[in-house]
Image (cartoon, rainbow over all chains, first blue to last red; front, side):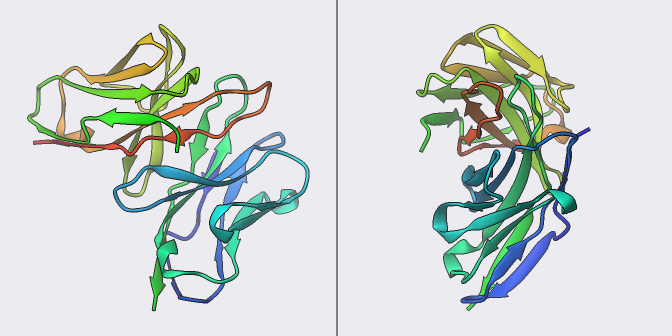
Length: 114
Length: 115
């Protein structure tokens, strides 16, 4: 069965520092992968998606993610974090088939220190 | 932002009462989903719909029912609410293209407290 693991429940970085959020997936075929961000009291906003092709994917707000099939990973990165990036981040994998269902990780809560 | 409206945004009710949450979309997307979000669990799928009157169960469907009589509306009903159903509920929509998974777009959620 498909699954997603986000090993870091909580991460704190200083403003201006680089960021990497980890995501590992389990899926038998070529996965469809997504990163979402959730600000307090809000719904989830799509940051970026990977379907196929180039393994380095650019998203909104200066985020990027790299798909590594050999490591079953899809880590999210940002070179310089801003205070407004403080939020919860969710990785998701498409369950395949016609249902368009997603399997979500448990999320990583990012805090940004001034 | 995708045109998704969830109502109510907040609700407090008592154990044993029926509760209905509404999701309304203006995007004419075929697929609609209900999730619940709880600390340490991420988002878990309750039910989803792949067309008018076409629905199916997700991973945590016990105690919930859904209905979709129009493309734009997807209702989630708790027939007899229990305290374990206290959660934040999110609606999402998507429009599949061919064989690939498309992103889902989310509403702002309903915070439901059952006392």
